[in-house]
Length: 234
Length: 128
Image (spheres, chains in turn green, blue):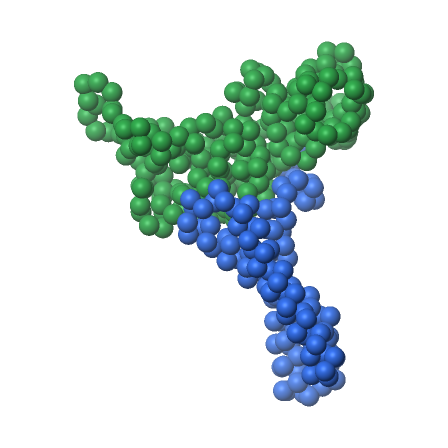
């Protein structure tokens, strides 16, 4: 099938304003959008810039806006786009460095602000810190996050203010807050109850819809809100 | 140099689907309610203090049946959507059923709005 790709282009070095360029390529229905981008870069325009690494939906490098939705280019098949025209743009709310590449630093700054690591000053046992299957299950969903930023950059609250920690940072905080081995929940909940914390979430569900790992992001945010309100980590 | 951070109208074009439309409608209906209450306050003020034609003109606008059809739609949607969000906020484990919650919201909205409109039309026909 023939597919037309309309791609956002911006190169700060050539003085041109941001614009869209169209490329016509022949694709198999089972091709991924990333395959088409690679084809264009290899055959039409070597200056086309985008991030990619593992190309298997694990590294989270190739998040972009495809036909208006945040998606990973390596996970989205041409046949699932139902049409011969594909518009590809950078994710929203972060500064565009070149073409589809955005400055991820504000995103990672928010991520670091929620202390995304295990905190436990108690003396370590002889072997590992034990945990039951039920205790592990409590935060299983939020361990799946790959920090692709699909959720955060689909959130209107983040579009308005990049200081809002955003869904991805809250998902990471959730992963540690509800971990029975962690002792930093109170500190994290204090950070997240602040001006740019969880209460900026207005239950819009764009994050849940955008997550390529199918994490129940809004539910995780809701559970953190409830933990702040009740102090209950159950 | 990187482009300036600028979302603006591009955000409106983001395809968040039904939940995003509900959120946008909730904001718009909230503003509309403020506007309606504002009109009511202004008209009462002018009516009591000046008894002016201006107040009568405002009254004619918001007492017209078409305006009331729109206002009831807005208030009822805002109230039911707000209730849905409050319930999901209080019981986050229900969030996985948010699609069903939205369907339920419309299932309550449609007969409630429909019946209200029918009663209003009947009243109007009877000269009430």
